[in-house]
Image (cartoon, rainbow, N blue to C red; front, side, top):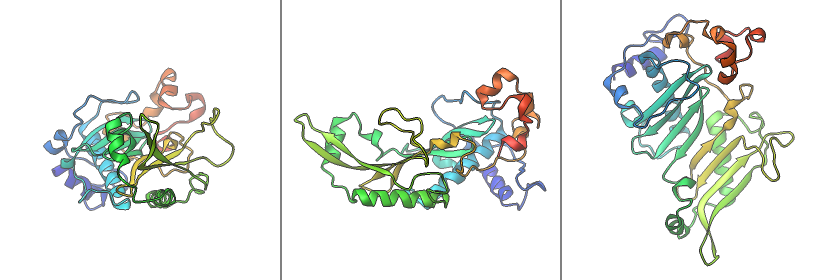
Length: 294
Protein backbone atom coordinates (compact mmCIF):
# COMPACT_ATOMS: atom_id res chain seq x y z
CA UNK A 1 0.00 0.00 0.00
CA UNK A 2 3.03 2.30 0.11
CA UNK A 3 2.56 3.35 -3.51
CA UNK A 4 -1.08 4.25 -3.03
CA UNK A 5 -0.31 6.39 -0.01
CA UNK A 6 2.50 8.09 -1.91
CA UNK A 7 0.24 8.56 -4.92
CA UNK A 8 -2.51 10.16 -2.86
CA UNK A 9 -0.05 12.44 -1.09
CA UNK A 10 1.46 13.47 -4.41
CA UNK A 11 -1.92 14.01 -6.03
CA UNK A 12 -2.92 16.45 -3.32
CA UNK A 13 0.35 18.33 -3.61
CA UNK A 14 1.58 17.55 -0.09
CA UNK A 15 4.66 15.57 -1.04
CA UNK A 16 6.40 14.20 -4.11
CA UNK A 17 4.98 16.72 -6.62
CA UNK A 18 7.01 18.82 -9.02
CA UNK A 19 6.46 22.55 -9.43
CA UNK A 20 4.27 21.62 -12.39
CA UNK A 21 1.14 20.45 -10.57
CA UNK A 22 0.43 17.56 -12.94
CA UNK A 23 3.93 16.01 -12.73
CA UNK A 24 4.30 13.23 -10.18
CA UNK A 25 7.21 11.14 -8.91
CA UNK A 26 6.28 7.52 -8.18
CA UNK A 27 7.73 4.83 -5.97
CA UNK A 28 7.87 1.14 -6.93
CA UNK A 29 4.46 -0.62 -6.67
CA UNK A 30 3.61 -2.78 -3.67
CA UNK A 31 2.56 -6.43 -3.77
CA UNK A 32 -1.02 -5.16 -3.54
CA UNK A 33 -0.73 -3.72 -7.04
CA UNK A 34 0.92 -6.88 -8.37
CA UNK A 35 -1.86 -9.03 -6.88
CA UNK A 36 -4.49 -6.86 -8.57
CA UNK A 37 -3.40 -7.67 -12.10
CA UNK A 38 -6.11 -8.90 -14.48
CA UNK A 39 -6.36 -12.72 -14.28
CA UNK A 40 -7.14 -12.93 -18.01
CA UNK A 41 -4.71 -12.19 -20.83
CA UNK A 42 -5.32 -8.71 -22.29
CA UNK A 43 -3.35 -5.95 -24.00
CA UNK A 44 -4.46 -3.10 -26.20
CA UNK A 45 -3.34 -3.31 -29.85
CA UNK A 46 -2.70 0.45 -29.60
CA UNK A 47 -0.16 0.19 -26.76
CA UNK A 48 2.90 2.36 -27.40
CA UNK A 49 5.22 0.87 -24.77
CA UNK A 50 5.62 -1.89 -22.23
CA UNK A 51 4.04 -0.98 -18.89
CA UNK A 52 6.41 0.34 -16.27
CA UNK A 53 5.89 0.31 -12.48
CA UNK A 54 5.40 4.09 -12.53
CA UNK A 55 2.76 3.89 -15.27
CA UNK A 56 0.87 1.04 -13.60
CA UNK A 57 0.81 2.90 -10.29
CA UNK A 58 -0.52 6.09 -11.87
CA UNK A 59 -3.05 4.24 -14.05
CA UNK A 60 -4.41 2.22 -11.12
CA UNK A 61 -4.86 5.34 -9.01
CA UNK A 62 -6.47 7.16 -11.95
CA UNK A 63 -8.98 4.35 -12.59
CA UNK A 64 -9.76 3.91 -8.88
CA UNK A 65 -10.46 7.63 -8.55
CA UNK A 66 -12.80 7.57 -11.55
CA UNK A 67 -14.63 4.44 -10.33
CA UNK A 68 -14.99 5.81 -6.80
CA UNK A 69 -16.32 9.11 -8.12
CA UNK A 70 -18.99 7.20 -10.06
CA UNK A 71 -19.71 5.08 -6.98
CA UNK A 72 -20.60 8.25 -5.05
CA UNK A 73 -22.43 10.07 -7.82
CA UNK A 74 -24.59 7.10 -8.78
CA UNK A 75 -24.81 5.63 -5.27
CA UNK A 76 -23.65 2.23 -6.44
CA UNK A 77 -24.08 -0.82 -4.23
CA UNK A 78 -20.47 -0.66 -3.05
CA UNK A 79 -20.34 -0.04 0.72
CA UNK A 80 -17.01 1.84 0.86
CA UNK A 81 -14.47 3.40 -1.49
CA UNK A 82 -12.63 0.84 -3.61
CA UNK A 83 -8.95 0.18 -3.01
CA UNK A 84 -6.35 -1.83 -4.89
CA UNK A 85 -7.28 -4.82 -2.73
CA UNK A 86 -10.87 -4.81 -4.06
CA UNK A 87 -10.23 -4.87 -7.81
CA UNK A 88 -8.49 -6.41 -10.79
CA UNK A 89 -7.02 -4.17 -13.44
CA UNK A 90 -5.61 -4.34 -16.96
CA UNK A 91 -4.25 -1.25 -18.65
CA UNK A 92 -2.14 -0.19 -21.62
CA UNK A 93 -0.59 3.18 -22.51
CA UNK A 94 -1.70 4.79 -25.78
CA UNK A 95 -0.89 8.12 -27.41
CA UNK A 96 -4.17 9.51 -26.09
CA UNK A 97 -3.87 8.20 -22.52
CA UNK A 98 -4.87 4.91 -20.95
CA UNK A 99 -6.92 2.07 -22.36
CA UNK A 100 -7.97 -0.54 -19.84
CA UNK A 101 -10.41 -2.13 -17.45
CA UNK A 102 -11.12 -2.18 -13.73
CA UNK A 103 -13.35 -4.86 -12.17
CA UNK A 104 -14.35 -5.67 -8.60
CA UNK A 105 -13.01 -9.07 -7.60
CA UNK A 106 -16.52 -10.48 -7.18
CA UNK A 107 -16.85 -9.64 -10.94
CA UNK A 108 -20.05 -7.65 -10.41
CA UNK A 109 -18.89 -4.13 -11.32
CA UNK A 110 -16.67 -3.26 -14.27
CA UNK A 111 -15.37 0.06 -15.62
CA UNK A 112 -13.73 0.47 -19.03
CA UNK A 113 -11.41 3.30 -20.07
CA UNK A 114 -10.16 4.49 -23.44
CA UNK A 115 -8.37 7.65 -24.55
CA UNK A 116 -8.24 8.59 -20.87
CA UNK A 117 -12.03 8.57 -20.54
CA UNK A 118 -14.24 6.34 -18.41
CA UNK A 119 -16.26 5.26 -21.44
CA UNK A 120 -18.29 2.31 -20.10
CA UNK A 121 -19.68 0.83 -16.88
CA UNK A 122 -21.44 -2.46 -16.13
CA UNK A 123 -23.33 -3.79 -13.14
CA UNK A 124 -23.04 -7.36 -14.37
CA UNK A 125 -25.61 -8.69 -11.91
CA UNK A 126 -28.46 -6.72 -13.46
CA UNK A 127 -27.47 -5.62 -16.99
CA UNK A 128 -29.03 -7.19 -20.08
CA UNK A 129 -26.27 -9.75 -20.87
CA UNK A 130 -27.00 -11.38 -17.50
CA UNK A 131 -30.24 -12.80 -18.93
CA UNK A 132 -30.25 -12.37 -22.73
CA UNK A 133 -30.32 -15.68 -24.63
CA UNK A 134 -30.98 -17.46 -21.34
CA UNK A 135 -34.65 -18.42 -21.27
CA UNK A 136 -34.56 -19.71 -17.71
CA UNK A 137 -33.18 -16.44 -16.37
CA UNK A 138 -35.53 -14.36 -18.52
CA UNK A 139 -38.49 -16.39 -17.26
CA UNK A 140 -37.37 -15.79 -13.69
CA UNK A 141 -37.13 -12.03 -14.24
CA UNK A 142 -40.54 -12.00 -15.94
CA UNK A 143 -42.05 -12.79 -12.54
CA UNK A 144 -40.45 -9.73 -10.93
CA UNK A 145 -42.45 -6.54 -11.25
CA UNK A 146 -40.46 -3.42 -12.06
CA UNK A 147 -40.30 -0.91 -9.23
CA UNK A 148 -40.31 1.95 -11.75
CA UNK A 149 -42.17 2.98 -14.88
CA UNK A 150 -40.73 3.83 -18.27
CA UNK A 151 -41.02 7.52 -17.45
CA UNK A 152 -39.25 7.05 -14.13
CA UNK A 153 -36.44 5.09 -15.82
CA UNK A 154 -35.93 8.04 -18.17
CA UNK A 155 -35.77 10.44 -15.22
CA UNK A 156 -33.16 8.25 -13.47
CA UNK A 157 -31.04 8.17 -16.63
CA UNK A 158 -31.21 11.93 -17.15
CA UNK A 159 -30.29 12.56 -13.52
CA UNK A 160 -27.39 10.11 -13.73
CA UNK A 161 -26.09 11.82 -16.88
CA UNK A 162 -26.03 15.23 -15.20
CA UNK A 163 -24.51 13.80 -12.00
CA UNK A 164 -21.72 12.17 -13.97
CA UNK A 165 -20.61 15.21 -15.98
CA UNK A 166 -22.31 18.24 -14.41
CA UNK A 167 -23.36 19.07 -17.98
CA UNK A 168 -26.73 19.13 -19.74
CA UNK A 169 -27.58 17.17 -22.88
CA UNK A 170 -27.29 20.40 -24.86
CA UNK A 171 -23.77 21.03 -23.52
CA UNK A 172 -22.79 17.48 -24.47
CA UNK A 173 -24.17 17.88 -28.00
CA UNK A 174 -27.07 15.47 -27.42
CA UNK A 175 -30.71 15.77 -28.35
CA UNK A 176 -33.08 16.52 -25.49
CA UNK A 177 -35.47 13.79 -26.56
CA UNK A 178 -34.42 10.22 -25.76
CA UNK A 179 -35.56 6.77 -26.80
CA UNK A 180 -36.70 4.57 -23.90
CA UNK A 181 -37.60 0.90 -24.27
CA UNK A 182 -38.41 -1.85 -21.79
CA UNK A 183 -36.90 -5.28 -22.30
CA UNK A 184 -39.39 -8.09 -22.93
CA UNK A 185 -39.40 -11.88 -22.88
CA UNK A 186 -41.48 -13.99 -25.27
CA UNK A 187 -42.51 -17.45 -24.11
CA UNK A 188 -42.59 -20.38 -26.52
CA UNK A 189 -46.39 -19.99 -26.65
CA UNK A 190 -46.02 -16.43 -27.92
CA UNK A 191 -46.99 -14.68 -24.69
CA UNK A 192 -44.90 -11.55 -24.03
CA UNK A 193 -43.78 -10.48 -20.56
CA UNK A 194 -42.14 -7.17 -19.60
CA UNK A 195 -38.83 -7.46 -17.79
CA UNK A 196 -37.59 -5.11 -15.04
CA UNK A 197 -34.98 -3.41 -17.21
CA UNK A 198 -35.10 -0.34 -19.46
CA UNK A 199 -32.70 0.99 -22.09
CA UNK A 200 -32.29 4.73 -22.69
CA UNK A 201 -30.57 6.06 -25.83
CA UNK A 202 -29.50 9.59 -26.70
CA UNK A 203 -28.82 10.84 -30.24
CA UNK A 204 -26.58 13.63 -31.49
CA UNK A 205 -28.03 17.04 -32.27
CA UNK A 206 -28.28 17.92 -35.95
CA UNK A 207 -28.93 15.54 -38.87
CA UNK A 208 -28.98 11.77 -38.44
CA UNK A 209 -25.48 10.36 -38.25
CA UNK A 210 -24.25 7.05 -39.66
CA UNK A 211 -27.87 5.95 -40.16
CA UNK A 212 -28.91 2.84 -42.06
CA UNK A 213 -32.64 2.17 -42.40
CA UNK A 214 -33.97 2.54 -38.83
CA UNK A 215 -30.57 2.38 -37.13
CA UNK A 216 -28.72 5.48 -36.04
CA UNK A 217 -25.48 6.18 -34.21
CA UNK A 218 -26.02 6.18 -30.45
CA UNK A 219 -23.44 8.37 -28.70
CA UNK A 220 -24.80 7.59 -25.23
CA UNK A 221 -26.54 4.50 -23.90
CA UNK A 222 -27.77 3.46 -20.46
CA UNK A 223 -29.69 0.57 -18.95
CA UNK A 224 -31.80 1.24 -15.86
CA UNK A 225 -32.78 -1.65 -13.60
CA UNK A 226 -36.37 -1.78 -12.38
CA UNK A 227 -35.18 -3.95 -9.49
CA UNK A 228 -32.53 -1.71 -7.95
CA UNK A 229 -33.76 1.49 -9.72
CA UNK A 230 -30.28 2.50 -10.82
CA UNK A 231 -27.94 2.58 -13.83
CA UNK A 232 -26.58 -0.90 -14.57
CA UNK A 233 -25.03 -0.32 -18.00
CA UNK A 234 -23.46 2.78 -19.51
CA UNK A 235 -21.60 3.40 -22.75
CA UNK A 236 -20.41 6.64 -24.30
CA UNK A 237 -18.70 5.96 -27.68
CA UNK A 238 -18.12 9.69 -28.28
CA UNK A 239 -14.85 9.38 -26.36
CA UNK A 240 -13.36 8.41 -29.77
CA UNK A 241 -14.02 11.94 -31.03
CA UNK A 242 -11.25 14.09 -29.55
CA UNK A 243 -13.20 17.27 -30.42
CA UNK A 244 -16.24 16.13 -28.42
CA UNK A 245 -17.25 18.31 -25.41
CA UNK A 246 -17.10 15.11 -23.35
CA UNK A 247 -14.84 15.89 -20.34
CA UNK A 248 -11.45 14.29 -20.88
CA UNK A 249 -9.07 14.07 -17.89
CA UNK A 250 -5.49 15.04 -18.67
CA UNK A 251 -2.52 12.74 -18.22
CA UNK A 252 0.53 13.76 -16.16
CA UNK A 253 2.99 16.03 -17.97
CA UNK A 254 5.63 13.33 -17.39
CA UNK A 255 3.44 10.70 -19.10
CA UNK A 256 6.05 9.69 -21.67
CA UNK A 257 8.82 9.77 -19.08
CA UNK A 258 6.87 7.26 -16.97
CA UNK A 259 6.94 4.92 -19.97
CA UNK A 260 10.65 5.38 -20.64
CA UNK A 261 9.88 7.30 -23.86
CA UNK A 262 11.35 10.65 -24.97
CA UNK A 263 9.31 13.81 -24.38
CA UNK A 264 9.02 14.28 -28.14
CA UNK A 265 7.80 10.71 -28.69
CA UNK A 266 4.82 11.83 -30.80
CA UNK A 267 7.20 13.40 -33.30
CA UNK A 268 9.21 10.19 -33.58
CA UNK A 269 6.33 7.90 -34.63
CA UNK A 270 6.88 6.87 -38.28
CA UNK A 271 4.30 7.82 -40.88
CA UNK A 272 2.82 4.32 -41.51
CA UNK A 273 2.07 3.92 -37.80
CA UNK A 274 0.64 7.38 -37.14
CA UNK A 275 -2.73 6.77 -38.73
CA UNK A 276 -3.14 3.47 -36.86
CA UNK A 277 -2.45 5.21 -33.54
CA UNK A 278 -4.77 8.11 -34.34
CA UNK A 279 -2.05 10.70 -34.96
CA UNK A 280 -2.10 13.30 -37.75
CA UNK A 281 0.56 13.22 -40.51
CA UNK A 282 3.86 14.71 -39.41
CA UNK A 283 3.89 17.17 -42.30
CA UNK A 284 0.77 18.94 -41.02
CA UNK A 285 0.71 18.09 -37.33
CA UNK A 286 3.30 20.10 -35.45
CA UNK A 287 2.67 17.28 -33.01
CA UNK A 288 3.86 17.59 -29.43
CA UNK A 289 3.00 15.81 -26.21
CA UNK A 290 1.22 18.91 -24.96
CA UNK A 291 -1.13 19.49 -27.88
CA UNK A 292 -2.24 15.90 -28.50
CA UNK A 293 -2.41 14.56 -24.93
CA UNK A 294 -5.01 16.63 -23.13
